[in-house]
Length: 96
Image (cartoon, rainbow, N blue to C red; front, side):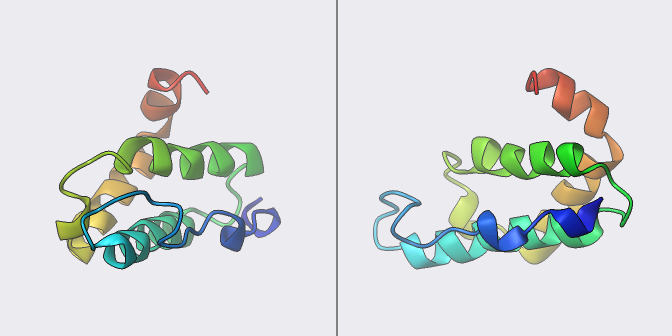
């Protein structure tokens, strides 16, 4: 159940995103937007464990991507929607 997942436990600060050539604050904001978007799009009755695994997938997928500082909200929405619509594929591929 979604209400058992505390989204604030996943949010990051610029101190933890690593070196992004002065764009650490932007990167932290974008990563946090991805977390919030996935959480908001998840259905209310999603299994807690599944939602936690999908949220963990965000860091693993995005933190090393050079495109991260340039992501637009529409791109984030589409990625999150895709992950939720195809969760079995993503969870199997990541061996969660």
